[in-house]
Length: 217
Image 1: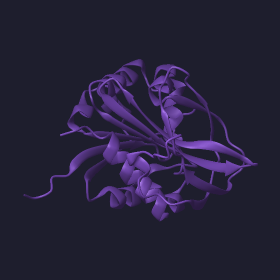
Image 2: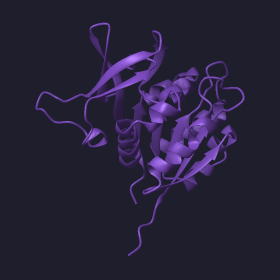
Image 3: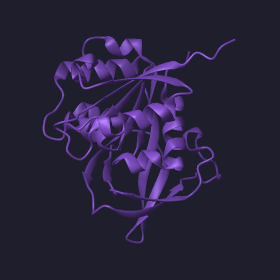
Image 4: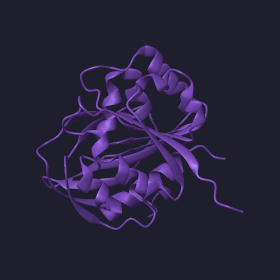
């Protein structure tokens, strides 16, 4: 039987995203996911409200909407999609959806600041029993120049931290996963620009996050 790829949609910004344009990373993302997903790229946020998400097994947020929140209808469309079993993978600046408070709750945290771009050491987080998560299976410790995002977690979201980075003598969360209704949500901090997507461990993270979050067939 031939392998049937799942459908994924990524939405981002270009001209109005000077630091995180989608077109700078979309082809690398397509290559990373190509074995398991057929990737559609878009700048059209109305797809969140139109019911178009139902055609996809996974929505990837690479949005850059720090100054302008998505509409109430767009937020409701995304919330409904995930609650009904859709997958959400949020990459780096994709957390900018947080400008809508209900979407910050969906993601499980909000970005609060980042110190200057620098080399960071990343490692897989394990629980007290020594177990990790399917998203980070096979991930080795790695070093990557990135923006060290810091977050305020939603205390009501039962998330699992998957990855941490070392900065200023302290470990900080860099990725997490949780369920939302019938759906699944993954956030991955690495993804500032093309070199992040080109790192082999980040590529594995993206594949693992996408496969875990996507709708079950």
